[in-house]
Length: 147
Length: 147
Length: 147
Image 1 (cartoon, each protein chain N blue to C red):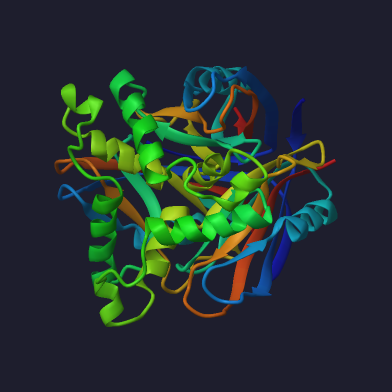
Image 2 (image 1 turned 90 degrees about the vertical axis):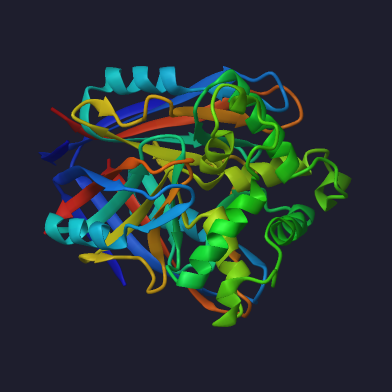
């Protein structure tokens, strides 16, 4: 599979809003991302998924029930809550920030010949790392060529 | 070093296939990436390197023999194998998934005036985190301007 | 908030130079990034921030004094210095490389209707992970449409 195209660029951006259930909630964004890609008519290019804010993350994982529980546990093990953090003197979510920095704010996924190049067991998810339920805003931005 | 160009966009995508030797194999992709950039004739833009699947990662490191062994060891220390993971009840690679999510699926590298902006000791590598040798597919996608 | 535009692409690249104070220095790049975006006149597109070299990282965090100290501590806890690394036989910064690989080399931030989509408490920072002060080069690259 390979492709080469030249032309005008089309850029389509949208903010996807959703509600989380609190710490640590993991939300599968793959379906809204796929719908956004389909609706765009972009044949070749890429989509960037970017989390606005510093206590959430965008990562890829297989969205399997047991694995999602494992993800939650490993996040807690890697960066424990309330370990004498300085930021907790003025707030209560130092560990949320530290976890978000470690896991990252965004990812980009290529589109080739109208196909989003995710693997079958590779879902794009939002990690709610903050300590309470929140209304979240994630940018979906496609840059590419409409054929 | 700075540049500004305006024009039609060219998007070139290819799937790079290779065989890994099993857990944990670290493969230097810098040479095929450089060849792809050269062949593209893109003067300014960027290349995105994206790993299809949820048990591999794309990261940057100096590709030095001792350091590569250190990378393998630290991956095992950060996320140990078989630590009672739920996903291991239906499969045997929970730790592979957890490691892939932590290290990430993709990276983008700018191209300026035909030069890929990697440092001298900064190589782009694929981390095989799954438990057996696999045939891997990594997307190389360049978006930019041909001068 | 959503937008769709089609046209010629403009790509503007620059290398941002700065001096770090040594291990572990955390430098807020948000202001120079914002200035670069403003000056570009790009209305829609994205900026990629890429660190040249394998002992630094680009991440997002709230740039709060206490949290920055927490970030420094957690980096040291996740990957300790001098833990018998092979790379330390030929150099003294194995832990710098391992930390840089874990935290990543780059990130991209969308621009919509002339607005850089960072949250209020979401700053883009450079992590100096090497063992001595260095002169650093970070690529700012914008790809988008000028309206």
